[in-house]
Length: 176
Image 1: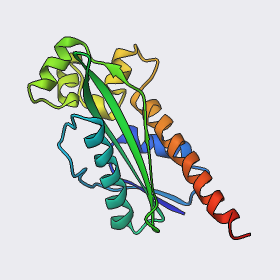
Image 2 (image 1 turned 120 degrees about the vertical axis):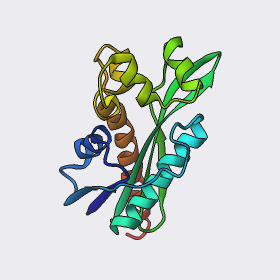
Image 3 (image 1 turned 180 degrees about the horizontal axis):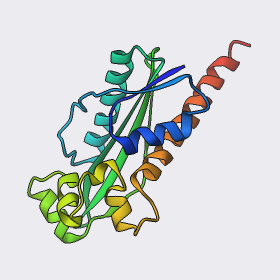
Image 4 (image 1 turned 90 degrees about the horizontal axis):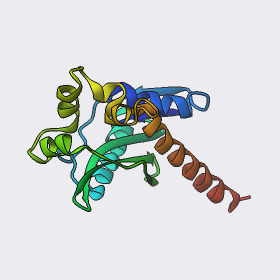
């Protein structure tokens, strides 16, 4: 089985590899556009970005399965929260989605994002590091390293894999 991942982001690809490495022949990172804003601002937009990435990756790589992972932010109760979504799409058009962890951003970070900067860019400035989104991510910084970006997306990929296995087994058992 070939799985196309709709990104070349190392943290996201590592999450897919951690879950599927033993179960497939090939995991292929594919550069695709999310089809949404560079900084998604709702659960709906973030989920649509994940779905679009999964569909585009599956089609572009002619894979058996495409996986899209997308991070965004959501305004809730006067704070800006990080959200993340994933989607798994197969050649037959099956679409499975899952959402993940949420955590609030500190006011000084949220303010910059609300002023139009992408969270990754703000985090680079905030930490004085480069490419935070490819490594620990905001979640790694604000959980003091207890959870990194790969961990966060790994949880979503497990939710996708489990739902897909359940869906496939449920459909296969109907034909026994």
